[in-house]
Length: 281
Image (cartoon, rainbow, N blue to C red):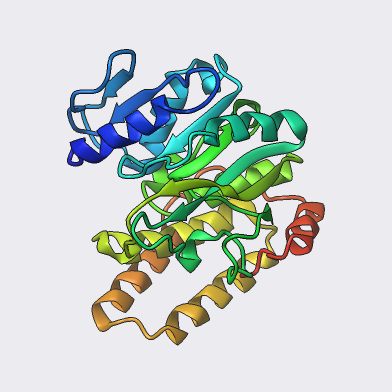
């Protein structure tokens, strides 16, 4: 967004320090000018904010159609930093060793405390963030994707703008036979924050949750999945304004177009269940 030039420069410096072959970098200014960047870093400045998935899709296409000029794409938030120099090398090794691996989700840790927030561990059993495992989704600002996945299942859903776009891509990838790993040894430092700091958080989370289900789940699971999330939201006792925004987004998700519907196969439902996250929660 162009408002964190010092953090962006620190991130780019940490990428430049990665072991092995140099990492080619593109910085996308999502409706904002790009600050000064080191020589060799490409930039794309968009005239308007396309949202998180829209901006990342532009970054993908900067590496050719569906990123086809390269084998792997890393996506890193501009206020993050790679504290270790072997992250890119570990990514290359992981994808080379496992032809079924489509996406790797990094561990996000606070740079001061080393703490990994529970919400940053993309599985239900999140008590031990240092445990790596197969998972069913990934973290949008700290991940690596095999570009063959993007060519096969498509890019991120731009209409989502913010929230759940990663799970939409993850479900499509899993339905196509790819696997997703959470790797605790691939670390991105990022300050501890609350997602609700974004003004659109409650509305977008609710709307996109409905879109996610309508687009991807077999018809019998749609009301189950959304019913569970409605009950969970009420159980968390949000404030009055937050609940009002959430319910407005929930309604919007049902009354607005969600994009093409491609329900996952029942064998994918079983795969998600075996991986510890059946698509009803």
